[in-house]
Length: 478
Ligand SMILES: Cc1cc2nc3c(=O)[nH]c(=O)nc-3n(C[C@H](O)[C@H](O)[C@H](O)COP(=O)(O)OP(=O)(O)OC[C@H]3O[C@@H](n4cnc5c(N)ncnc54)[C@H](O)[C@@H]3O)c2cc1C
Image (cartoon, rainbow, N blue to C red; front, side):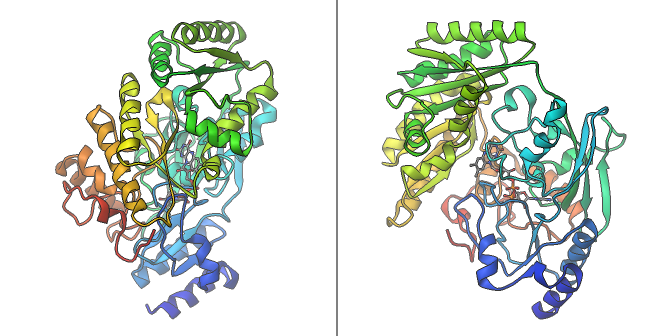
């Protein structure tokens, strides 16, 4: 189908104003939160599942790719149209369809913003557990596609642990439910297959999520360290003592500088690292845990431990943590967020390696991360305008991921593979592993129409690990 005919067909489905083709309109969709950019050819914004299905059918007839897009906060280039086609924005599918408190579930459309699920049930004493730091902006559809985590992953798990079922549009436009509203539906766990599939198998159009009862008591403390080694060792000691906090987050000196330069929350600028630890449960239990953690931190070299005295103080600490990525703009024009994982016990070793890599490549790196999960986020600060600097950033990022693997970890904790990490996936999986995944993908998306050029290494040689060129597929600029 020629492009003009496709555009006419799409306008007939979703209406004139919801098909964007002019450069000044589609430019808004050229990038996500990563460093990858591609100008879309067409952006379609359907208003309901039937329109999504009709757009998918039109794409099939025209033989063009479909790139689902939520809020565009992804950090791996997942929503970028690497091979052109239609960017399918789910932003207008933003209804909370059902809240069923007795059964503790909600059915939501994919464009619902993460925090709005909790807001809708908070007064009844419930919450939706997965809380990416981007929760005020990211969509539940994007969370499902990336199997997102967040500061409370340590206690509650990632998105897949909170999704009971998904309604999806398949490549031929069929609308099916995978899983449902109850635990453990019979048959293959195709819902589990879809969660984390990064938009490569179909379009998620409804999600059945679990709701959790708010805890009686939440206590939060900030432990302040003069040595990074002591802070990382404290993480090992706390979990080693059998305590699983709801959150165990770390920020280093450079991150503290960024936060305090923008919207200060009172983190000490001269500290080498701070740990933000939260415990939840019944009051007696949280009081006991917070005292134990306080002692472990002090014994392990914390120079000061502050326990939040009220909800305002607690919220202030979280504002600093959750605003940390955004605050990086105070230190450099650009930053590149890396997302590696190591076993918790290797945190002291990996932080040492990150410091060495920072020196080796002469790049400032700010660390803010989910320490309890061993999930690092080194933010490499740079200036895109400086010749050659981006190349060094990419090399430094590769060195960090390689170090994570050497220490028994992985190349992504929660941000997904997207374009960014597909060159590295061969470091983790064998050709046979990747072939098995490719077969599952092909069963659901035989033409490879959904989100091509993501997740799997290209060209097809599965074991291949390419470095820099793989970050910039043809036609892509960063
Ligand atoms: C400041 C900041 C902090 C962050 N903190 C965290 C964090 O703590 N934890 C974490 O895990 N991530 C974090 N992220 C990353 C990001 O917010 C998550 O990956 C989020 O889930 C992306 O959601 P989105 O709606 O923006 O999706 P998008 O970026 O629009 O898309 C992400 C992927 O999902 C696919 N997709 C989107 N909607 C659908 C759908 N309906 N059907 C099928 N596929 C779909 C897209 O094709 C793409 O591959 C952070 C990002 C930022 C900018």
